[in-house]
Amino acid sequence: TGTIQGHVRLTGAAPGNPIIRMGMDPMCAKLNAGPAKPVQTVVVQGANGGLANVFVTLKGTFPKTAPPSEPVVIRQVKCVDAPRVVGAMVGQQLRIVNSDTLAHETHAVTVKGNEFNETQPHSDMVFDYTLKNPEEMLRLACDVHRWMTAYVGVEPHPYFKVTDDAGN
Image (cartoon, rainbow, N blue to C red; front, side):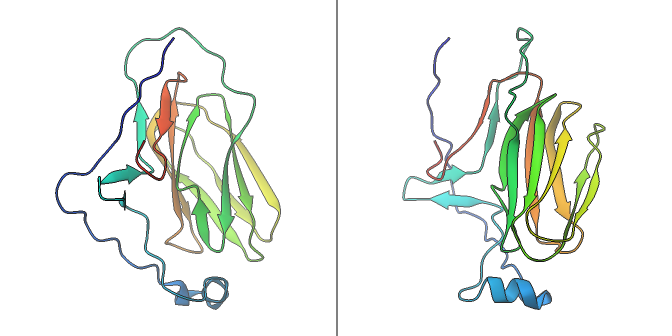
């Protein structure tokens, strides 16, 4: 056992992130009054170029490990998925919580059989899904609000992390 510490950083110029067009849904626009929010495609933090929301995993053969009993949670808050990137193990529950007072419809864009399409028409609705197969990046998309996306790195082992806001 041990700890690997590091920093994921960008070299060169960061690409621009497009602005979310919340006005396409007046309720989302009302929830997000103020400055426009960018899509968090590439999030660079600080002068050192740290990258937030990067899924980091080890490759190889590891001893079989039971998945955690606690679910990995993604919340739909003000028409945005939070967090945008999470990691989970095969067999672990993925929990999607609608914290908004409007409908969201989340479906998994999968090539590995982690399929679902769930409508959550009001706040406090919870959808649980047990992840079935390893998948480098399972994309979650909202069919109501096209800008809402989240990503789940699904691994058969517990040797992964998502970088924090500073890129650690």
